[in-house]
Image (cartoon, one colour):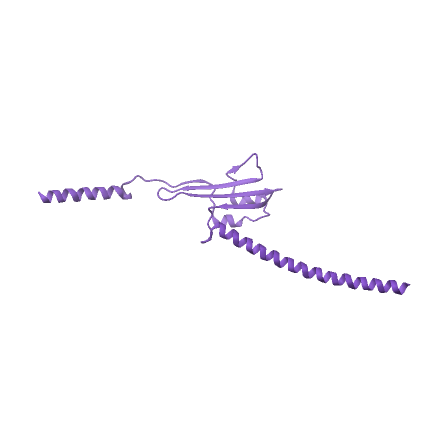
Length: 162
């Protein structure tokens, strides 16, 4: 009698474990919607590109707003059969047919989040602006020296004429 109980419990336990495994489930397909946004494709987009160049790289935008014709939204939604959903969005703002702003949402770059990469880019731009201002200062100083020497030469010429 004990053998029958043990065998019954073992069989029930095996069936329950088998039902929880994915071997006995219905096959679910992966669903991709929108424009596929790879990091390589997105990195090709630069400020100053024309709308035709962007369309060549990324294809037609998923959303073109009739109220904001200078804004293109590329949206990618991936629903795997098993696993977590993935959503990516890229928004491009144009002015006179050229890209002036790029907004990335959930587009990962090698272990750096978008917020961190934007902070890094801002700090690099600030450093470049500081270097440019120092160069401008040096040029201004040299131009002021040249202007002073020209004024001295003009004064000497006026004195010679008198």
